[in-house]
Image (cartoon, rainbow, N blue to C red):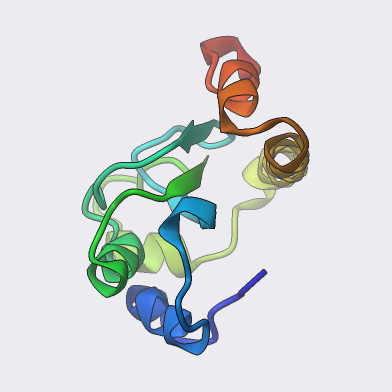
Length: 130
């Protein structure tokens, strides 16, 4: 497990401390403003989707072929800068849903380790899994 101490946009640089990392065994967990608050999405591979931290990982590895667990934080309200939005704590009215999402993300991670990505995707990528 690796938690970057860099700025989010430089997450790929944290991988430099893990020489020879194989993208096939990598799972990147990150927040995603394109998913509603509370929604999880698991993918085997893909692009950055505009997420600067994920873009840094793709650039560092030279591939988007690694698994990712996206945690939906919702879109910023109109007039709020997205960078300010993602760096702000959840409002009290959203805190319980955010905490529940983190718990489900931990459960998803356990399922990925125990049974693989395919099984976890079937369970957590359903629309009713929120």
